[in-house]
View 1: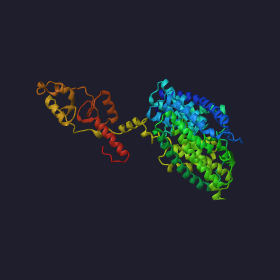
View 2 (view 1 turned 60 degrees about the vertical axis):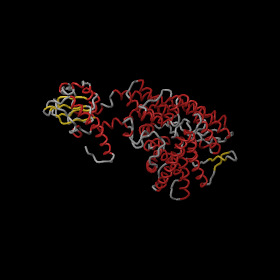
View 3 (view 1 turned 30 degrees about the vertical axis):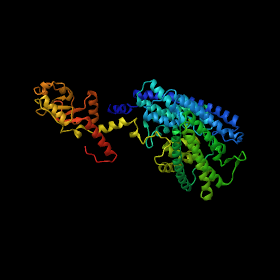
View 4 (view 1 turned 180 degrees about the vertical axis):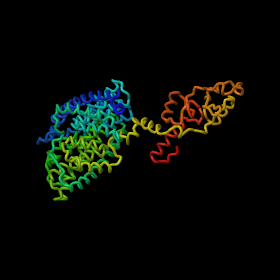
Length: 615
């Protein structure tokens, strides 16, 4: 019997009412993520075909299939106009109907978890989807994962409100939505689920949401995969880690991605702050950003859109470069020139993303991060292969591996989600053989990038989140007992003291409540407000025993400060007498709300190493 009771206790949280409802919400989120991803991709393809294939005359390559497409650009000078149109539509939708849908959606979803108790307005998912489709399909440098994260979060928040779950589970529903949305659109259910619980913090996880996120991500993946196939999102050659020599080069790659990651974060927020200060209507700002991105796109079309379609080319050693002067794509054999151009493209991709999303355009930052990492991985691998010939046994595999690891380590560093990105990119590329060397490069990038993060709404860890601050205050208060902080010097009164003398003591000592003690026993309490209502002519004749309140709750030395705070709140009183026991009523001292606060703050300072504990 005791063993069964123990199992019940362990399962109590899982089978609780709120958690059951969260599981049901996860099923809905999974279904919506699956069908929502299908709708998102189909609309994106439709508009991209109209903008690029029909108007600009550019058949944008696809990530899923490596085909020798006709990469001609018949009307390159229309690119700024088309990107600006996408920015105009996106800006109008966002700033007219849902301003919180601006920028990269994952950050908005993170903010909903930490700062808004999981509240997402019902219109946000729809506005986010349409505005992001216009931004990305017109050539804005943004990804589709951010919108899906915010869409999933919005659906989770909506159904949590519909089922009237408490804010704690509504927050978890938002986390489930983030993970399911990203895991579905990238066909990376495991990585997406972990990303949802990891991206909230720089150095922590929201572990309680993991299992429901698993469920939602798998359902979304199953539905989306039935439409698009269950193969990885990137069609790239198979790779393998073949020699320890390569670890040195992957370590250097980790350093390079950390440097570019810091540049990415700094420029992104610099551009965002600059656009916010511009004295023009908000609707116009994405148009300005779109025009500037389009001007860059005339000379470097690789930076437009998600950029996924170029990755299958690069991983096969094919490096088409757009020759603007001749108006056609050329393949350059000089590895020095290619390396320089690719480092330049990484920087231009950072600028383009900062302009697109920083100006208020709608889209994600994950895909651009992968693009930046791709350029760095390709450029550095060419340098390594030609600077150290003979040290790498399989150059073709090394090139592909460097691109994949570059994608991982750059975004793992700036997203502060190393575990999730490692798994997610492995799922997206089908290259699980690279997990070991990727871990090294990711660790270096993560450590060297320090606190720089592309997600400004991230907090350090759970104790720093408003979502958990009450939990941690409770934990601290439960560790401190009344006996540790009881105030034995608090002034007291005897039953025979006059009302006038009692008022004098209160004003002199600055207190509004005084305990009345008789023969060492607590018999009641008098308050300043009650004494003050006694007429002045009676204050010198009446005794406090005549008006004391004997029904005051008491506390005991073994009670915790959390219990005391609950008792004070329940009885709406700021101080409680401490007695040895209910039977003896032997008076030991007083404890006030100020005592509780000071003990709590002192414990906090002790825990963070600012002072030694004195309670």
